[in-house]
Image 1: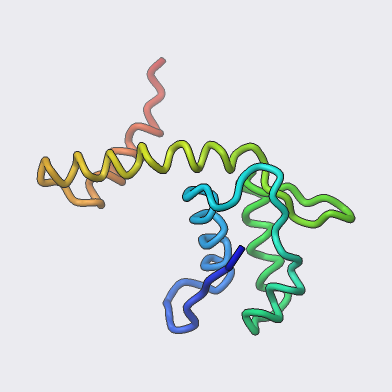
Image 2 (image 1 turned 180 degrees about the vertical axis):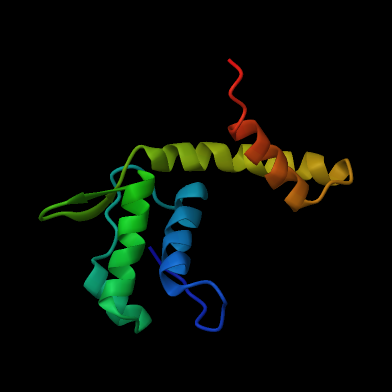
Length: 120
């Protein structure tokens, strides 16, 4: 697994690290049960503070994508399979929106509205 960051980007490094893991899960490059590199390994490889990596891993844990296991480190949960499954649906939705002349922002607004819909 290759975690990627852009030190010149506006997004905080911990968000970029977490985003890189999410992207790999969505693309199916990593799946449930996969072990993430140790925070220390990522910190050294990317030349970032250890606490930055730990914050990214905690964010992923809070989202339910990663489970922290003593002695095993950070392990992807079954949610990784959901990311991969929904990725194709998301691409298809964006393509349909483009064909209809809608931008990504409009799709995001529709998704947010759908998520806040309380009707059963």
